Length: 264
Image (cartoon, rainbow, N blue to C red; front, side, top):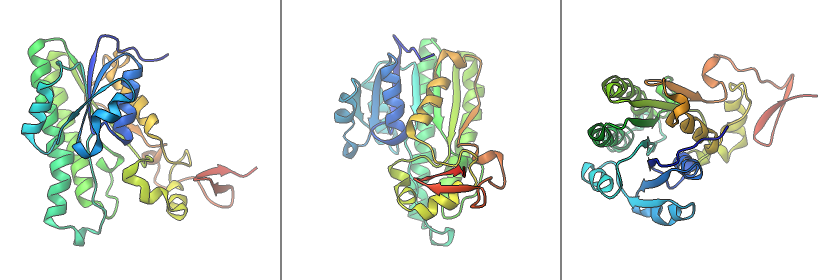
C-alpha cells in the first residue's frame, strides 16, 4: 500500500541531497506539494524542479532565514526537519568552532525549524505531522563524533517535549533514527571496504542502508497510517541497536559487494 498525500503541503529541510532528497521525492511522488529548504550552494530550486517540487534557499542556522523561507510557502501539513552535518575527529581535537557548527545546525537549527513550523500549524488548527531526523547516535557514543552525538541525543529531548505540547493541536511529532546510510555525509566510510566489513559485522541485516529506506519510514510517520503515533522514534538501522555483538564472522559468512551474506 502506497502513501497518499494529495492536497497536503510538505517542507523538507536539507532536502536537496541524501536522506532529505529521498524524503522530498517520496512525498512529491505520493501527491504532496513539496518545498525543499536548503543552502544556496545545494541548488534547491534546480534539484526540486527535477521532481516537480519547489526549492527555497534557507540556512537553518539563521532564524531570520527560517522565518523568511516559511513566509514564502503555504502553511505546511508535513514538515521533515532533516538538515544536519557532522565533524569527524577525536574528542580531544574537537574545537569550539567544530562544536558550535554542529550544534547550531543539528540541534538549534532543528529546534527553530520545529518552533517556526509549530507556530504556523497551531494557528490554523488543522493538525499535521513533524518528522525529525535523529540517529542511532542519539543513543550510543560512537568515537570521533562528540558534537554529532550530543546534537542527536538532544534531538530526542526536542522530540519528546514537542510531542507533549503539540498533541492537543493534533500535531504529531516523531523521529527516524537512521544507522549508517549511504549518503554524501558517509561517503568516506562507504569508500573503504575494510571499514564497512567491520562496521557491518554488528548489523543483523549485514549491510548499510539507503536513503530511500529512511524515506519510507519518514513517509509512514508523516502519513495517516501513523495517526495514533507521536513522540516515537523509529530505528532504521538494519537491527544495529538490537544487539551488542553482531552475528557475522568469516566462519559462516562472506563479505563482498559491501555486505555480509551467509556462506552456502
